Amino acid sequence: MAEPEDPEALPPLALPFPPLVRPDRGVALRPWGSDPRDAATLAAAWADPEVERWTQVPEARSEADAARWVAGEAHRRDRGVGIDLVVTVPGDPGAVIGEVGLAVVEPVGRWAEVGYWVLPEHRGRGRATAALWLFTHWVLTEVPIQRLFARTDPANVASGRVAAAAGYDHVGDLADGTVVWVRDRGSAPTAGGTVGV
Figure 1: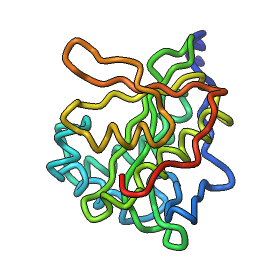
Figure 2: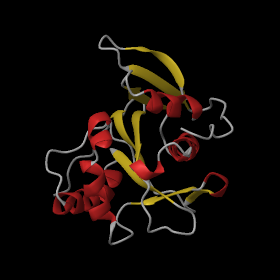
Figure 3: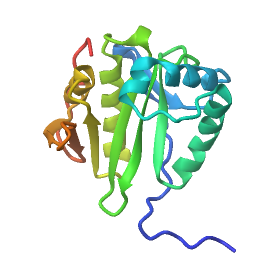
Figure 4: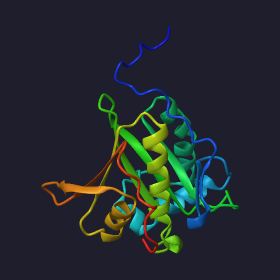
C-alpha cells in the first residue's frame, strides 16, 4: 500500500540541469556521490574544526557514516525536504572544495534554510560567495522555493560576509545573537559577490 501523500510536502527537488557553473569565479556545483572519493572528503570536512564549529555536523562522522549520508541525498531530494550539492572546480568535477544546500523548513510557505561551507585550503578566495550566489539564483528561479534564509553566528563574520555578498539581506538578530539573512524569489540578483569571502 502506498503511503498517503503529505499535503504540505514539496514536490521532488530536481538536480540542476545543465550543471551549474561559474567559470569566471572558479566554481561549479554537482551532486554528492558522483565521485567515489566523496565520502572520504565529506568525512574529512566533518572533522575540520571550523566546519564543526559553525555548521551542524552529525555525531557519527566516519567515512562509512559519510557514505550513508551521501547515499541518502537522493531520497531527501525525492521527498522534497532538502538538497545538497558539492562545490567543485570547473574542469575537475571530482574535486570537492565545499558544499551548499538547503533544508525545507516551512513547506506551506515554501521557505528553506540554506547552509554552506568550504574546506580550509579554499577559504578567502571568493568561492563560498560564488557558490552561494549560483545556488541561490538557481533555487529562486527553478525550484519551488519562495524564500531562502541563512542563520550565521555573530562571531563567524566571514559567513555573514558571504551571505551579504551573495545578495541576502540582513533582516534581524535572534535573542541569542544569531544573525538572520533572507533572499526572496523575485528579489534583484547581485552581480555574484565580491572576491575574498
